[in-house]
Image (cartoon, rainbow, N blue to C red):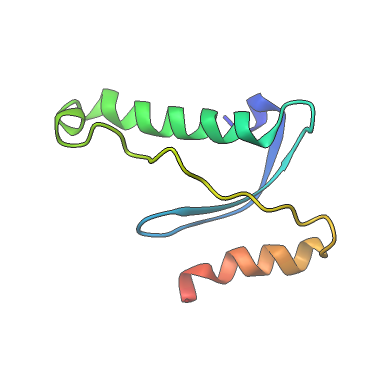
Length: 88
């Protein structure tokens, strides 16, 4: 799904209440559109497969998200940071 939007997933770590994604995004597309697409699909698909979820949880995601650019950092350092988030 990410590549459909002109982005590349470099690293991902899932946490109990949030997800860390390291992605490269085409600036013409924009990170805000990618986040909206990811949240939309990842919320919609479980609701279709498990309809009882929608009555218990109106949405799997909040409207908020945090984005930071890492252009000034070596990619290996940022990748290692994302990889180690589960250990914290």
